[in-house]
Length: 133
Image 1 (tube, rainbow, N blue to C red):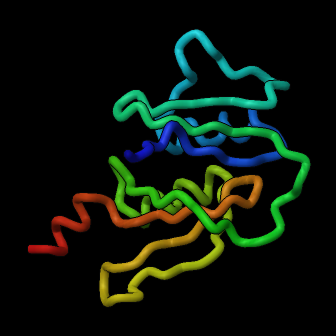
Image 2 (image 1 turned 90 degrees about the horizontal axis):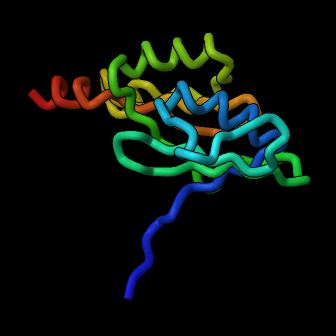
């Protein structure tokens, strides 16, 4: 017998603020009938296309080391570089730049959200398809 992933949990100090930050990044929305509000210690959002859910939960511990698990994001509408620039303007910070690591057009950029949780920006599906031709 196997298990399935119910949702992905992100520990944080302010569940509402971080869930609100991530919603426009991912295009996620609040759960129907369960809106997230300031002061909520747990805030769940979901992808209206896939149903994947992220739970932001407040914990007393501050982040102190690199994440062992992180999100790898592929832009839906922009290129990798356009997405990186948008995210930096939106409040993400750049942790590492691995663009071109495997030749021209390859690689990814490691960013962090306002609480320091790392995530990677990969090339879009269109960029990957164009490189395969």
